[in-house]
Structures are given as structure tokens and as C-alpha cells.
Image 1: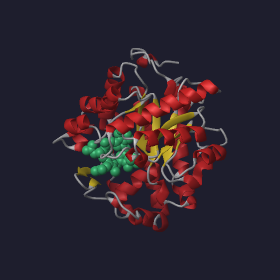
Image 2: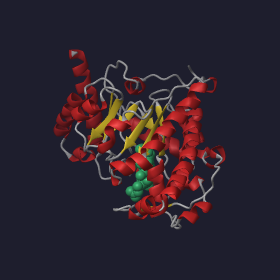
Image 3: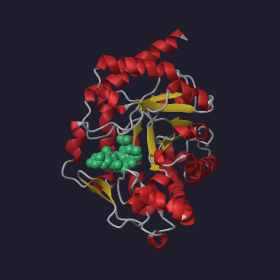
Image 4: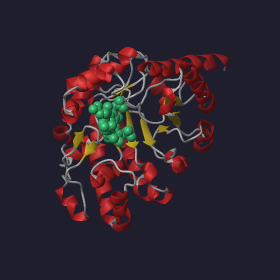
Length: 365
Ligand SMILES: Cc1c2[nH]c(c1CCC(=O)O)Cc1[nH]c(c(CCC(=O)O)c1C)Cc1[nH]c(c(CCC(=O)O)c1C)Cc1[nH]c(c(C)c1CCC(=O)O)C2
């Protein structure tokens, strides 16, 4: 059912991505790329030039333009709103800056459990993150129903690790120290994040997001036992609570969980209330299908570095990937984001290969 508030949005012309998420019949396998709006596009670099990253995130017009740029070049089957996972720690009162050449940086990361007192417990998402909602509504109009618009959030463990590490890290040992030394405070922080994320995702749907992806980018730094204790319950809780609330409003929005390098938890992830499980490139497509037993749709998982290959090779790799996953209940994507030094033309070759090979395969069924 269309939410009354949404009825004025332009009608969706290509719902292939939404149908694949639900395991329904499709004419071709849908494809989009994580970080499809990014520095590999000259027009992206031009729009972003000389501007602060988070100021750009706070401008609905800029987010809309950056989200639409890749769609003007390539026939992607979905768009993801330009924003960042770190707007949530900002909304909870933390200072986060994007430092050129270094990446995201927290000048005052959380060091000890008493630092949790610095955080805003009850976040008014409409006030603190309203700019994301406005970006989504604007983009949903400007996309003119071409493809669905995906909203997203970072998952609690990934956000917690940034808030404690203060930026990128190889070992994540500061954040992991909390799990072993301060398990109670860790759960308290994860719970606080979960509450904000649930509100944030619901706000995105109310604003016009047609699907949601939750990024657990730092899953791989945890082992199976730690993942089961500190990540999985919160991922499940998020999907359950978002879905229950949407159901009350007569809405149903597919949700994707992308837990990078969590190959050890594939079975659990396929039973965690998400319609789609996103995969990185370390998982073999066929074995992913077997291990998830047809319970969910799958998304992924070409090694982004395969985009450095010549176009014919990209086409062969895509064909094998499609044969491994099969065409039903499948959304083609990379196993992680596009890198800044990649050639736009090769992204185009990837998209075209997915469409061409999958059309062929579906015809032969
Ligand atoms: C871990 C993480 C972050 N941000 C995000 C994640 C989860 C996904 C993942 O695992 O990569 C999520 C994210 N960040 C961005 C998007 C936009 C949508 C899209 O995928 O196109 C999404 C979905 C834009 C962005 N977020 C960022 C960029 C590049 C910087 C820029 O535009 O100036 C973009 C396009 C910056 C960013 N933001 C973050 C990092 C590590 C960086 C890179 C810093 C660097 O390389 O210098 C944190």
C-alpha cells in the first residue's frame, strides 16, 4: 500500500530491484554499486571540490545532485542516497571531521565507559538528522521514478568502533578492548545506537526511502562468538523494530544487511529479519546460496578490483558470478565500494554485463 504521504511522488518505472529483493520474477538481474556516487566520477570531484564533506552531507541539494550523477551515466537499477554512516555519532553529540588523505576523524573519541555520559541518549532525529530526510524527499522527487532510492545507516558495532577508535584502524584494538574489558558498557552503547538507528531508518522511509541497507562494515574484525554477542542481536533488533513499526503504517520496505567479512555468520544473517543479505567477495556465490538455503535474496559480490580488468574479462567474471548466484532473488553489486581510481567506463561495462548475461540466462529458463 502506498503511504498517503508518498502518493505525490512520481510513479516508479523500474521496480526490478524491489522485486529481486523480494525474490519475485524479473526480466533482468538488477544492479547497483556501493559508492556509486564517488570520486571515480569527474563530475563528483567537481561538485565536491573545495567543500567540506559533512557540509556537503548537510545540503539536500548537494546530496540530491551527487546521488543522481551516476544515474545519468549508467543504467543502474537503484540509487543510494549520498550521505555517510558517521552522521549518527554526530547526531549523538560527537564531533566528526573528514580529513583529506586520512578519512573520518573524531577529535575526542570515547576512551572509557564514563565517556558515554557525553552522548545524547534521546536523539530528536527530525531535528538532528532532518537534513538527511530532506535530501531523501528531494531526491525521490528529482529521480522521477526512474529507479528506487535506498536509504542506509551504519550498524551499531561499526559505529561504536569508529566512536572509540576515533577513525580508521587496522586492528580496532581500542574498540575491541571495550568488548573484553567493559562488556556491560559496550552493550549500553550498542543499545543506545540501536535506538537512534531505528528512529533514523524509520525517518528515512517516511521521507521517501524505498529500501534500507544496514552497513556492518567492521564485522570481519570480530570472531564468530563476538559477532553473535555484540553485532547480530542488534542487527536483528533493528530490522524487527523497523518492520513492526512500518507494518503498523501498512508499509513494507525491503531491508538489506551488509556485514563485511562475516562469512562465518552467513546462516545467522539469513535468519535475521532482512530480505536481502549483502556479501563481500570472499564468499563463493554457490556456497552462499547453499548456506542461506533460499531463505533470503543475496546481493553482491564482485571484487571491486575486478573493475581494473579489461572489459571482456569483467564480462566473463560477471557471467560466472551470475551462474553461481542464479538469476532469482539476486541483486548484482560489488563486494564493497568503488575506489576513487577506477575507470567510469569499466563500471559501465559491469552494469551492461549484468543486464546482458542475465537477460540471456532468464530467456533460457
Ligand atoms: C565505513 C563507512 C563510512 N561511510 C560509509 C561506510 C559504510 C560502507 C563501507 O564499508 O565503505 C557509508 C557511505 N559513505 C558514502 C555513502 C554514499 C552512498 C554510496 O554508496 O554511493 C555511503 C553508503 C559516501 C562517502 N563517504 C566518504 C566518501 C569519499 C569522500 C568524499 O566524497 O570526499 C564518500 C563518497 C568518506 C568516508 N566515509 C567513511 C569512510 C571510511 C570514508 C572514506 C574516507 C576516504 O577515503 O578519504 C565512513
